[in-house]
Structures are given as structure tokens and as C-alpha cells.
Amino acid sequence: MRDGAAPPAAIWLSLGTAVLFEVATVTASQVAAVRAASPWQDDPYDAVVSLTQFTVPVLALAIAVRMLVRRGPGGPDRAQQTGRAAGAMTVLIGLTAAFEWAAILVGAHATSRGTWTSVLIGGLTVVSGLTVVVTALLVRGRGPRGASARWQHDWLGDAIAVCDRIPVLRNRVGPRAVAWVRRRAMTVFVGLSALAAVGIAGSLAIGERWTNPLLIAWALAIETTAFLAFCVLSNALAGFVARPPRTRSRRVAEASMVAGCVAIQVAMAFRDALWSALGAGAVTSVPVLVTGTLGAGLLTSVVTAGLLTALPQHPNPPPVEGTSTSWTSKS
Image 1 (spheres, helix red, strand yellow):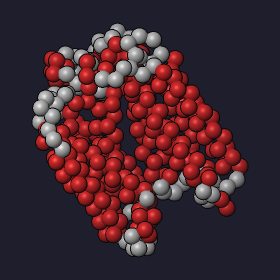
Image 2 (tube, rainbow, N blue to C red; image 1 turned 180 degrees about the vertical axis):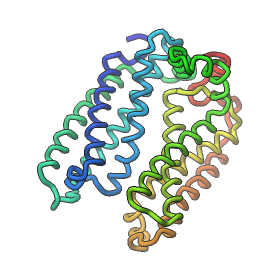
Image 3 (cartoon, helix red, strand yellow; image 1 turned 30 degrees about the vertical axis):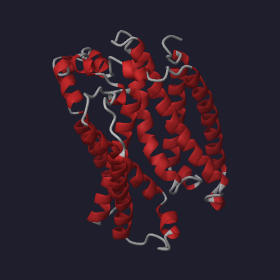
Image 4 (tube, rainbow, N blue to C red; image 1 turned 60 degrees about the vertical axis):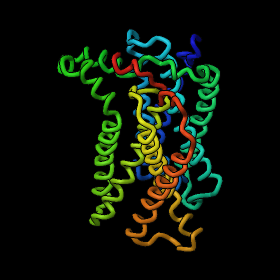
């Protein structure tokens, strides 16, 4: 391997693991007979599964496209970024597997287990084993500490290369469009997160026949914050979109926002346990659900902002997310 890049075999194995994971996850969540026998059909386990069944294929698609676009710009940057993206995807798969094993070990839905439960556990065993192997390979091929600070390219160059092969997009996606995305990366992240949330929350509302506007709005907020945290964190790790340097106050605001988004997901997944620990009993009304989950996110954001603001300011803060100022002029 060169320049601290993960070997291609590890990347392809991570993609194969992602395919198996997605097949097993979609089957367990969308096929009624299988879901009825699943130990992880309820929260907090289902909260993790519901997120990763959408985020894992997004990362897998991006990685697969980059592996197929062999002549894209970047050289060592491409290899290191692809390895990091594969690592992020593997972490999501491993996190989901850990929650699913926890559901099995605590005996969740023990009375409804049957043949399909055995099939699910068998699939989980295979995915878990592959995840361990992929993790070991990626760790061995990880780049040197601080390598991201020297990156000169992001993934948008691949987007231009792919769109150049599609006649309809050839004249629509170019350096000017890429530069716009880089300047307004957070706007793009919010827009994509909201778009995905509308589709998922809308499908959920229709499927469950929700009629309460507050409940629908809450579901939309939950999905949006989940995908927004995913976009920002995965971009910080793998450098999908190079971002120009930002002021300290902007970085604090974004970090606080992400912390709040994560806190909302935790409060939503563990709402019953948290409410019981606070002596409030089970969540029985939509207003309580909305106040508790979104309130936890708001409180976490405020506390995070206060802590980060109180920290001494670095005289010359390094570029964040592994970017350099030269990225804004490259594609």
C-alpha cells in the first residue's frame, strides 16, 4: 500500500459487507413476517437500524463510484479519503451489529422468536465477522496522523468526471457548480437532509396513518437532524466536499449544532429509559415526546457552545475537515 492508503481489497470487501448488511437489514425491517421475529424491532435498537439502512448505502454508492472512476484527480488523497469513507461505513455497520447483538443478549421479544430469528442471527454473525476483518484491514492501511491536513482534492472532481459521461449533465455540472457547492456546503447538507427527511417521514406518516401534525413535524425534525449529523460528520472524516476556512464562531456554531443533532437521536432512541430515570414514567403524549427529545438537543447545543467558547483560542487554527484553501480553486 502507498501513502498510508487502505488496500483496494479492503475497500471492495467493505462494499461486499455493506451489500450483505443492507440485504439483511431491509429484509428484517420491511418484510412483515421477518420483522415480527426480529429481536431488534423496537427502540433503541430500531432507531440505529432505521438510520444506518439509509446511510450505509449512501456511503457504499459514493465509494463504489470513486473506485470505478480510476482517472479521477487526487492520487494519494483519493486513496486515503476512500479508506476513511470505508471506515465510516464499517463503523456504522459495526454499531448496528452491536445494538442487534445487545437486543439478542437482553432477550428482547424472546417469546416471538422462531425460524426467522435464527436466520437473522445467522446473517448477523456473518456480517459481524466480515466487519471485524474489514476493520482490521482498514486499521492496518490507515494514513499517518494529520494526513488530511495535506489533502488537495475532494470527491467533487469525481462528480464532474461521472457527469461528463452523461449527456444530460455534461454541460450542467462543471467547475462553477462545484465551486458553488464548496462555498455553500452547509446549505447543501441541510437541503439534502431535509429532502431525505421529507421522503422518509412522509412514508412513515402515510404507512402509520398519522393525523397529528405535531407528530409528523416531530418525525421530520428527527430525520432531518439525523441526516444532517451524518452529512457533517462523514464529510469531516472523508472530505467529500472541501470547505473554505471558517471563523471560530462559525466552527463553534456548527459543532454545537451537530452535538445537538446527536443528542436528539440519543434522546429519541432511549426515551423510555431516560424518562423512567427522571421519574417521569413512560412517554404517553406527543407534546412530551417533542419537548423531551428536541429539548435535549437544544440543551446539548447550548452547553457545547458554552464549553467551546470558553476554550482558549488557537492563534492560527488549522483548516478543518482536512481541507486546504487551495481546494476552492481545484476540481
